[in-house]
Every structure is written in structure tokens, then in C-alpha cells.
Amino acid sequence: VRNKKYISISKGRGNTWKDLGTGTNKSDSSYAIEVAFRPDDPENIWVTYACGTDAVGGVFYYSNGKWVTLGRKNGLTADVTGSRQFSNIVFDPNNHNVVYLSRRITAGNTDDCILVSINGGLTWYPIANNIAPNLVWAIGIDPRHDRVYIGTSAGTWYMENSSGKSRHEKNHE
Image 1 (tube, helix red, strand yellow):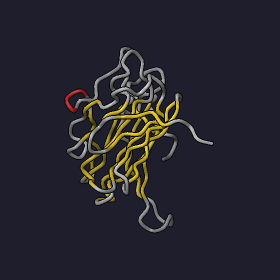
Image 2: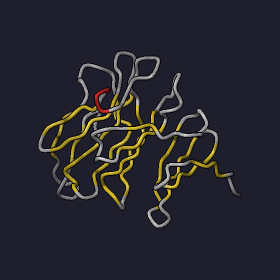
Image 3: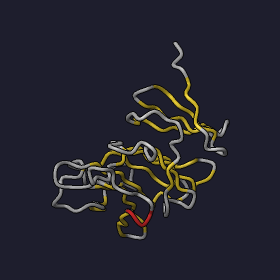
Image 4: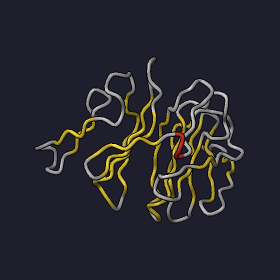
């Protein structure tokens, strides 16, 4: 990520770089938060953007030489401030069509602070269940136990990947 926005990729161990541009409008103040690669297709690059004062952020992916913007028609609605700020994006290592996404800010609606796609990111559904209305700092997947871990300001939560039910896990010392 260059200048917090422009994405470049290297296939030569960093010796040469190809500029892919950016998925977001170059004139707005959006900036990249996280970059993820679809495990079965390293040319398929996903980027979450947050925003400054004149942008709405969003989720974009690069495939077949072009950027694609995901939005309302894909289930990524804006919060009460009109923002589509997302942060974490994680592909399930056991099923690359399952992707988890978190909102950067949950203003006004905590039901969709965590979203899942079961069709490779084409449509998204909220799965926050009983997760406390806090910032989501990280999402991790334990493929051996089929669990999705969610790190929030209120602690660590986990969800059985197949059931979608979340549980709070107390912090252990």
C-alpha cells in the first residue's frame, strides 16, 4: 500500500512492482485499512477502505485487471452517518467462498458489525448475534476447530463457523 491508498503488487520478491491503482475515488480521503488475498487466487486482491472527511470508504477487489466496488446491492449498507467504513477481511482457509468482514465504526447499528459472505464476497449478511457493540479489532479463523475469533474492545468472542452462534470468551491470563 502506497500513500495509504494505492496498491502495488510484486511477483519478483520485491525487486519489481506493478501499480494496480486504487479501488476508491482518487480525489477523496479514503485510505486502505487491510489487504487480503483470496487463497486460491493470489491475483484476486481485496482491500477495505476507511475514510476521512469527504468519503464513505468501502470494500473493493481487484480481479482480471480491474477494480470492482462492493456496496448496497451486495449487502454492504451505510451506517447512520452515511459511511461504509470496513476494516478486517478474512477468507476461511477451509472454504475460500466464505469471507468475514468487520465494520470499522458501528455508529447506530451494531447488528452488522460482523458480516459474512458465503459466495466469495458477492453478497454479505450480518452475523453479529450477541456481540457487544464495540469496535472490532481483529478477526481470526481456527480451521482445525471450525471457529471464528473476533477481538473487540469488550474482549474476545468466538463463533462456531457452522452454527453462526457467538459466545463471549473471558480473557485468560
